[in-house]
Length: 358
Image (tube, rainbow, N blue to C red; front, side):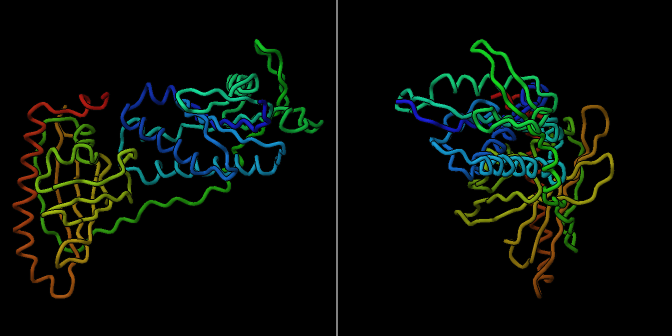
């Protein structure tokens, strides 16, 4: 039975080049985050028919078209997408190609309306019919701008005012007329995304520097990527974190230590020289302290080697300052051991390049 439906596709452009020319692991996470964000930004009760690599195919069975609701849906997804992209500009801690170039990704929409049927594929119901083919073919078009929303003549009547943005596309099924609207003006509505303030605790508890025989970015990835944490940090029973997201400032994770005692940490940073990278984590769960931050300061030295400095700072609770000597002793032991395990891991030939393609 044929039913009328809105056919709605948000498509991330720049996806192919982004994946082919950047770190495969982080590019996969970034695209996954963005697609999930688009799904979560669905305010029209659209049904998800398919995730198609860099796009979502959504639909809604209805006999009534509300162009205002459609435009609001486009705006909602667009703002959510670009707000997230801005976070990679202001709150990222990773310097790989994917995280550094995420701002190049764009978003476009194709919206169509027509009768559809359904087919069953392994107990899954999929929209089917010529209008489904048409909306997908419209993803390939000659619209002269990067970010836009295509609305076919089935969605809205194309008036004289729309003629400057009107196009007639020829496909194997025939021609289809549509208008397109630029979206870049919506960026004026984006919220401010401020870097998380740098706030280093007052008392230094630990500081040690060593030369590590690996490239700076590879070492940074091992330290900042939670996937590798249990390979070199001792005493953690379990690590809980969002595996489909790239670590960035403000990201939280939990370490379960000493028979599942929870220690929650937040990713932070601090000022560095122009030739340095800094990764840090902050926690408020350490006894006698209000807050404790540990930082990894990386600096490239001779070719293929990195100078790594680990620093620990703390602010104390009342009378907690009297425990400073004991904490310094304990951290000197614990972090020195982890430092040695990290270096042994690198010296064994481990590299993130081996695991990023798995």
